[in-house]
Amino acid sequence: MVTFTLPAELRRLARSNQKTVYNLLWRASAQALLKLTQDPRFVGGRVGMVGVLYTWTRQLLYHPHVHYIVTGGGLSDDGRWHASRPHFLLPEKPLALIFRAKLRQELKSAALLAQLDQRVWKKRWVVDCQPVGSGVAAFKYLAPYIFRVALSNNRIRKLENGPVTFCYKESATAQVKRCTLSAAEFIRRFLQHVLPNRFIKVRYYGLLSPTHRHLLAQARQLLAAKATQPLSAQPIPATATRTGQVNALRCHHCGNLLTLVGPLKPRGGRPP
Image 1 (cartoon, helix red, strand yellow):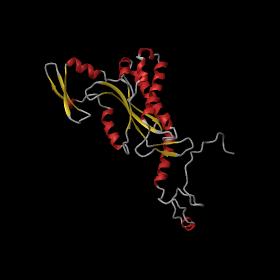
Image 2 (cartoon, rainbow, N blue to C red):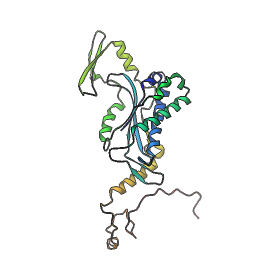
Image 3 (tube, rainbow, N blue to C red):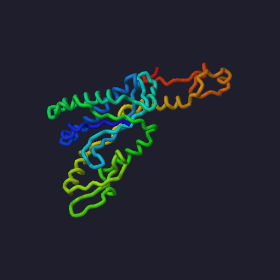
Image 4 (cartoon, rainbow, N blue to C red):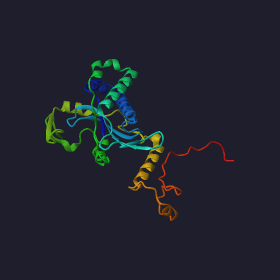
């Protein structure tokens, strides 16, 4: 799971231009991930990504960030699947540098760059990469928040005579604590997390994007073929080939494994 956090210096601009800045945050973070994963030193292929936008902390503070669940490998241009290293996808520092540069360019194109303190482009930006195994636990963590608001009713502990008290779990200690705010401050914190009308907070990129569904099918075939490969890489004897005791993904003539290179493109015109 890869998390991109918008620096504090950009949050006032984001709050005043939510739809524009959120879209730029999506675009810059996705492009940074896709660019660095294409580097053969790391993955060397196009990965699949599903992301969720968050704008709050557990105390309802304004904190825009995007969580991505990324496939542990990618599909290269020559039709081969390249798995990432175990428990490692990308180095965080170069990824943060690319993200910063791309977001700066996007804000410049949107004529918003002049509104920022330019010192923000010299500070260290935060990008976090954490291995999450098969991703099941990460999906379970993100799924409940997709259609929820920043604060559910069961977290409100007290509401009377103005002040509002709600509970939250502290990240560092995992202890449940309480926060009490005036009614006006509570409403202010809550409403700043209401997204613009029809804004999409869950997005798909790379192999999981709608325009690359054909590549996703190809990647699934390659992964299925790898899962059926035997532990030994020795060629299958000819006797086994003649008796049909071979996997369907092996060549019937030489016994070697078949590799999916890519789908054949249909030719134009009618057949003769």
